[in-house]
Image (tube, rainbow, N blue to C red; front, side, top):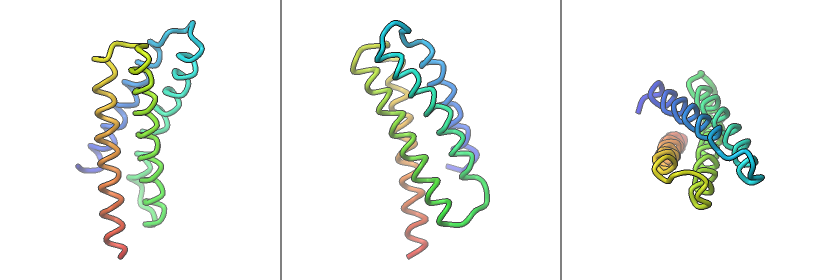
Length: 119
Protein backbone atom coordinates (compact mmCIF):
# COMPACT_ATOMS: atom_id res chain seq x y z
CA UNK A 1 0.00 0.00 0.00
CA UNK A 2 1.37 3.40 -0.86
CA UNK A 3 1.39 6.30 1.62
CA UNK A 4 -1.39 8.22 -0.15
CA UNK A 5 -3.71 5.20 0.05
CA UNK A 6 -2.92 4.84 3.76
CA UNK A 7 -3.69 8.51 4.31
CA UNK A 8 -7.02 8.14 2.50
CA UNK A 9 -7.97 4.95 4.38
CA UNK A 10 -7.34 6.51 7.78
CA UNK A 11 -9.17 9.65 6.72
CA UNK A 12 -12.20 7.65 5.57
CA UNK A 13 -12.17 5.62 8.79
CA UNK A 14 -12.00 8.85 10.78
CA UNK A 15 -14.93 10.40 8.97
CA UNK A 16 -17.03 7.24 9.22
CA UNK A 17 -16.29 6.75 12.93
CA UNK A 18 -17.10 10.42 13.60
CA UNK A 19 -20.50 9.99 11.98
CA UNK A 20 -21.09 6.75 13.86
CA UNK A 21 -20.13 8.40 17.16
CA UNK A 22 -22.77 11.05 16.62
CA UNK A 23 -25.41 8.32 16.28
CA UNK A 24 -24.72 6.91 19.75
CA UNK A 25 -27.46 7.47 22.34
CA UNK A 26 -27.13 10.77 24.18
CA UNK A 27 -28.99 9.57 27.27
CA UNK A 28 -26.63 6.76 28.30
CA UNK A 29 -23.52 7.78 30.28
CA UNK A 30 -21.41 4.99 28.82
CA UNK A 31 -22.48 5.88 25.29
CA UNK A 32 -21.64 9.53 25.92
CA UNK A 33 -18.15 8.56 27.12
CA UNK A 34 -17.63 6.23 24.14
CA UNK A 35 -18.84 8.97 21.80
CA UNK A 36 -16.23 11.37 23.15
CA UNK A 37 -13.47 8.75 23.00
CA UNK A 38 -14.41 7.70 19.47
CA UNK A 39 -14.55 11.32 18.30
CA UNK A 40 -11.09 11.91 19.73
CA UNK A 41 -9.46 8.86 18.16
CA UNK A 42 -11.32 9.43 14.87
CA UNK A 43 -9.59 12.76 14.50
CA UNK A 44 -6.22 11.80 15.96
CA UNK A 45 -5.60 8.70 13.82
CA UNK A 46 -5.81 10.38 10.39
CA UNK A 47 -3.82 13.35 11.68
CA UNK A 48 -1.01 11.07 12.92
CA UNK A 49 -1.12 9.04 9.69
CA UNK A 50 -0.64 12.25 7.70
CA UNK A 51 2.48 12.84 9.77
CA UNK A 52 3.93 9.61 8.40
CA UNK A 53 4.15 11.22 4.97
CA UNK A 54 6.44 14.01 6.16
CA UNK A 55 10.17 13.49 5.68
CA UNK A 56 11.72 12.76 9.06
CA UNK A 57 14.28 10.73 10.93
CA UNK A 58 13.82 6.98 11.10
CA UNK A 59 13.36 7.14 14.88
CA UNK A 60 10.55 9.70 14.52
CA UNK A 61 8.93 7.64 11.75
CA UNK A 62 8.96 4.52 13.95
CA UNK A 63 7.48 6.51 16.83
CA UNK A 64 4.65 7.79 14.63
CA UNK A 65 4.01 4.27 13.30
CA UNK A 66 3.67 3.08 16.88
CA UNK A 67 1.27 5.93 17.73
CA UNK A 68 -0.85 5.19 14.65
CA UNK A 69 -1.01 1.52 15.56
CA UNK A 70 -2.09 2.37 19.12
CA UNK A 71 -4.78 4.74 17.87
CA UNK A 72 -6.13 2.17 15.41
CA UNK A 73 -6.18 -0.42 18.19
CA UNK A 74 -7.97 1.97 20.55
CA UNK A 75 -10.51 2.80 17.85
CA UNK A 76 -11.11 -0.90 17.24
CA UNK A 77 -11.56 -1.54 20.96
CA UNK A 78 -14.09 1.28 21.33
CA UNK A 79 -16.01 -0.06 18.35
CA UNK A 80 -15.92 -3.60 19.79
CA UNK A 81 -17.26 -2.25 23.09
CA UNK A 82 -20.10 -0.51 21.25
CA UNK A 83 -20.85 -3.73 19.39
CA UNK A 84 -20.61 -5.93 22.51
CA UNK A 85 -23.02 -3.65 24.39
CA UNK A 86 -25.44 -3.65 21.43
CA UNK A 87 -25.45 0.14 21.24
CA UNK A 88 -25.58 -0.05 17.43
CA UNK A 89 -26.37 -2.57 14.75
CA UNK A 90 -23.46 -4.98 14.22
CA UNK A 91 -23.56 -4.49 10.45
CA UNK A 92 -22.62 -0.83 10.99
CA UNK A 93 -19.78 -1.47 13.42
CA UNK A 94 -18.19 -4.73 12.20
CA UNK A 95 -16.73 -3.34 8.94
CA UNK A 96 -15.08 -0.54 10.92
CA UNK A 97 -13.58 -3.01 13.37
CA UNK A 98 -12.21 -4.98 10.41
CA UNK A 99 -10.71 -1.81 8.93
CA UNK A 100 -9.03 -1.01 12.26
CA UNK A 101 -7.55 -4.51 12.34
CA UNK A 102 -6.29 -4.17 8.77
CA UNK A 103 -4.70 -0.81 9.55
CA UNK A 104 -3.00 -2.26 12.64
CA UNK A 105 -1.55 -5.01 10.43
CA UNK A 106 -0.32 -2.43 7.91
CA UNK A 107 1.34 -0.32 10.61
CA UNK A 108 2.93 -3.42 12.13
CA UNK A 109 4.21 -4.57 8.74
CA UNK A 110 5.72 -1.14 8.09
CA UNK A 111 7.30 -1.18 11.55
CA UNK A 112 8.85 -4.60 10.92
CA UNK A 113 10.12 -3.47 7.52
CA UNK A 114 11.81 -0.37 8.97
CA UNK A 115 13.17 -2.37 11.89
CA UNK A 116 14.73 -4.97 9.58
CA UNK A 117 16.46 -2.22 7.60
CA UNK A 118 17.94 -0.83 10.80
CA UNK A 119 19.46 -4.19 11.77
